[in-house]
Length: 174
Image (cartoon, rainbow, N blue to C red):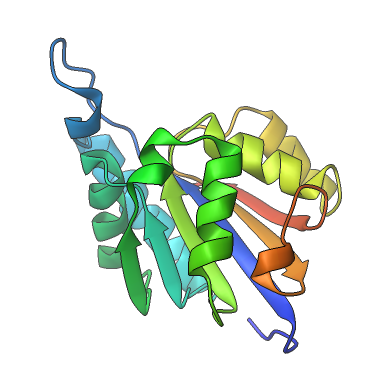
């Protein structure tokens, strides 16, 4: 993907399908076999569309860590990966603050997180701007292994609701 010097891309990636085990702490839930396949398919899609982030911000939950690991097996790449508990525990504003504070000079940042936060953040940042098909995909529920690709022009510190355009939305299935 070719970007102008002030263009930024934010990729919001909802973790893949996780187990539902009674009594197991939410933070420790692991991917199901389908989740692993879907995450690898997401990695292949990211690679195919040349969406290689310089920075990956990943929730500390087991399922998000496993999602990113499986995505890299599928072909995704990230120059640097940071695990951030606020992506697990925070809402859209908190995740947005993490992006603003951590992105630095990166042009492409990917966040591996949870719903409803990922869908709310994609919707709020774009406020209807961008691809109609991508917004239709987002409105359909943003299931596990969904990816939203947003474009933004300006410094990360100025990224706020209504300043980005939703370019693509993809639901990965393996």
